[in-house]
Length: 548
Image 1 (tube, rainbow, N blue to C red):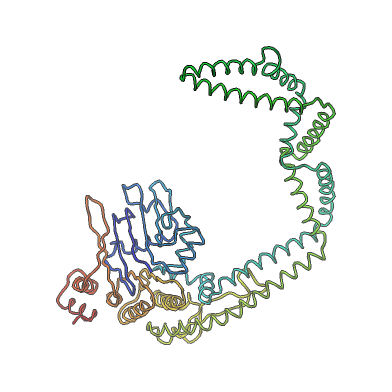
Image 2: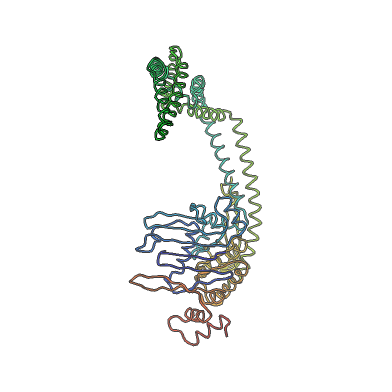
């Protein structure tokens, strides 16, 4: 459930801090006051695409923060995604320059992560939702969502893709056997050449180091011997002279403590020079002139360089080239085996048809259940004998969306023949049908918060009263927020916010206030009576609110 929403420098909003309760909350106000902007702000916090035009004029950034209560499923998701899981705070910052940042519980997050958690928290029904109902894909998606068939539909799409890919590979293999065989022969020769060379990752760097050492072995041996002669051999060897100096200073330090530090440093230098002498002796004993090994190393380098030039890559990438050639050879070998490809394609096709068949059965069941529920809801919304039907027509050969396409139909409005939604319903009827669908779909939704943004457009009179009752009933089960212009709907709310606009220094600012009983009477009266409010409209408002 949404607990708190903070908005700063967003479009016409300067700063708003709103707290929401459970049940049905209405948001009302004059046209242009910014009612729907609040929904847009929340949608941004839930991962919707950011736009620099959302930043209030003259400001550097817009910031939205939404706090929700922490359900067990959300807490598990937070832990899985490595976010702090002691609360749920979603925050979005949009800069005027276009950059957008997202945070979950103070930790940086992606817009995709906001959207993932947002889908578990809030379901927003926009004021133009009825327009999408005219699209075939939207109708199919609504049907699948209502029946919890989306995971199965995704499996069907994946199976279709796999089947099509194998079918295309089979067709390509049948039409290009000769060309494929020629390429396989060339690949086999290239692979054999590379496998014989056995290029190894990291080998080139080791070869270069060894070649340098072998090529300069004489200089290295001579240099090591010279260093040893200076440090430890001969009458004037460094270590002997240093030992004599260290001994003399040690004797002096017994007479004057100020020389103690010098004595310590000399002892340290003695130890380090001794270590250097030891290292140099081991090195001089290891390095040797080996013309045969040098020739072997340089020959190996030339072999690898020649292969690298042939394949136009760096020497270090030869193992990658070999792997890629082997993979390509295996694919062509598979393609050359027509019989094996046929079996794979047939198996993929059978798997698709099995999944698609299961999806078809479940869609049929869901279509009947959804049609019945929406038809009942339509009658409550004063659509007379209107009857909602879902036609599932077969798609020959199947598709990524399954074996059928869905079409929403209406009967009983113009006549008893069921016709496509777009051909039967008027604008107002379409709005009511959309609302009926949304109410039914929302009952099956798992999200705790439902938001309706002026979905009651085109509705009035007694129907508006029914809509208000419907939303109030939904509010008994979960949190419902509704932006509305209908007093009959707003009067049914358990919490009522009024959105208004003010002008400061030539700039329009959107304001919002939680209404008490007296203020609600004034707001409902305004919605009923327009500019001039009379005692009659106020009395009517009291009656609607049950405050007589």
